[in-house]
Image (tube, rainbow, N blue to C red):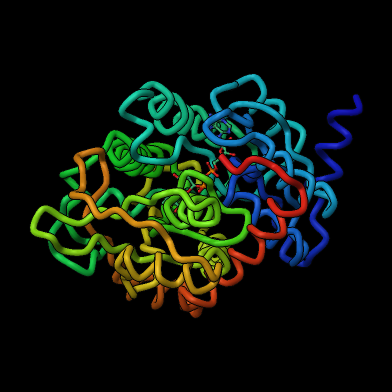
Amino acid sequence: PNWERRVRASARPRSKTGFTVLVTGAAGFVGSHVSLALKRRGDGVLGLDNFNHYYDVGLKKARMGLLERSGIYIVDGDINDAVLLKKLFDAVPFTHVMHMAAQAGVRYAMQNPGSYVHSNIAGFVSLLEACKMANPQPSIVWASSSSVYGLNSKVPFSEKDRTDQPASLYAATKKAGEEIAHTYNHIHGLSITGLRFFTVYGPWGRPDMAYFFFTKDILRGKEIKIFETSDHGSVARDFTYIDDVVKGCLAALDTAKKSTGSGGKKKGAAQLRIYNLGNTKPVPVGRLVSILEKLLKVKAKKKVLQMPRNGDVPFTHANITLAQKELGYKPTTDLEIGLKKFVKWYVNYYGSKKKSAW
Ligand code: NAD
């Protein structure tokens, strides 16, 4: 049928690497950038996304338009749909899965806990089951999160640090994902690399993230809330530019060993890895706002409040020694440069199309 032909054509690799990659969450922020980068270097790419309504579906469709113009097809479906996954793995011999689909955001979990369990736990298991049964078995690279470090007070966060105090249900589901990855590696011989992203930002970003809605509110003259810690300290984030994160994702794909279908401890066994992908330069949110004010040439109306207990942590800061050593990961984009690119995109996208941002 037509559908299968489109799926196969989209996933045909054109490079010598011969990689054929299924990208879940391909209509999302990181997934769309990763898909385009893979396609650009000649890998075969097929997207999968359920276009959920967590934020503006119009933005997801616009990203899809970009991907389609590059010859990438996105299947509209859910990672929990085992029948669909089987059909996809039967149609295409995927060498890799880049798993970016998830219910993101920490605050939304207060009202919608089920969507985190659905996408981040049940959905991840469903995808790993499909990988386990596929022939060939793909290697998997997936997005965990810096949120697993939770209320850890030791900075910078390194991969060996404790992750037993998740501050949100989102963080708990990402931590659960890491445990699930361990069992599928250990029992079923899947090669799985988890990447702990640190506050990724950039063009085509996520409207629920602070840099994005601050830009929108500053331009509209709406008051923005800046939170400080209970002892009046600054809330800070290790903002990491999307292009740097994408390079880290591709390096993780390139260094992933093959899945072996046999348990983790045998010779030539499948690998289980976890890496921080951050910027190593935490920036207070107040500084983020002043950069935006400068770029937008508008003074923000600010209100400083004490941080509520809504799942956010006071600060994040990545130690990236391991990713540097094993992936050659090296972020190079300063926050001012990256935000300039974001603002340029934002003004162009929302200015010309008169869409509502969130
Ligand atoms: P995003 O919400 O833009 O992208 C996720 C995509 O997955 C969306 O398009 C959504 O429609 C899709 N999706 C969700 N549930 C699905 C399901 N059950 N089946 C199929 N598709 C589904 O988020 P993002 O910022 O691009 O994040 C990508 C990944 O990185 C996520 O796993 C997220 O948790 C993780 N992460 C992101 C950041 C960040 O700062 N952006 C930080 C840490 C971790």
